[in-house]
Length: 94
Image (cartoon, rainbow, N blue to C red; front, side):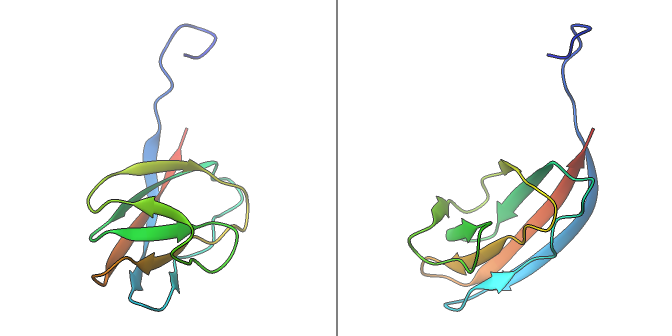
């Protein structure tokens, strides 16, 4: 909750996509004004915000929205578990 007892609500901003296969793919780098992104992937995959994604990174189940705190310039990278897909990354703005 914010200091005035209203819930913190974010609105969607710009979106980008990354088509991932057995080779990692990156979405657009995070803009400097963005602090949170929402990620939804069309198939089971792994995500990294600190380099090229590998199957040792965080697992994201298909069609499950995830929210991440991010910093300026981070670039989300994705790689598939078994089926290629598309990651949808949306900036969430206060």
